[in-house]
Image (cartoon, rainbow, N blue to C red; front, side):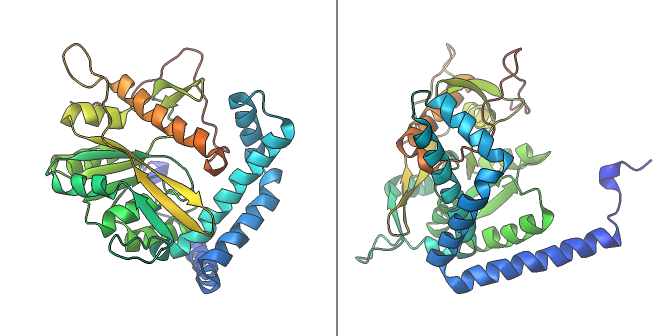
Length: 318
């Protein structure tokens, strides 16, 4: 018996995906013709208009009210709209990712992107050790992977493909043109991630979304489940762990900030404590979100801790 997931796809399914890929490419071509500023503005206008009608908007409002219980309702709604605005801009900016990151430390001309902490990037590149870089869905979260590739930092970026196969295919094409190594979050991805570290490479991963079989951390004053894999790898390799974020600036500009290596908590045997490491990383993410809440993805159901408490980790890293 052939498992359903292993069955060959029908001709109609393949033709539909091919058609949708063409449509998505056409939309991206139009966005390229408009330029990054106009396509981002159109994306923001669309999401600000459509977003409040979607179920995810109720999730965003509920999340904001829970985190900021004293916030006036008009400010809650304004913050949710700002988050939709940022998400629309990210979508409009995808066809222009290569142009958006134009940082040149030797240039006196102000570009679209500036980098605070480029010395940390270069130190990671040149220290001959594996390293871990965590991030969050803030501003345009794709830019750090492009920065790493431009400055020769051997990094494998772990990403979750969109559910729509046509969109996933086109986005992968764009990412492949601008970023270094890519690894989709899928069954067996952990082995590829471990292999990258064993070769002295670096892992980049977003850690601000719910992970059903994760470890419990405190995020924005509420319990949340986070994927423990970076903490496990930090323990296994005892390597530097940095955080990187993107801040959306006025006039269509961005700032990347890379933290110094974190001083992660250790157990009595001197090994990195996995849950404590994930809490430390999550606390950094919380500080970022609180500084620029309008640039975070509030529409995600981040707080889903089961009544029984902590979930089970997905991977055993020896």
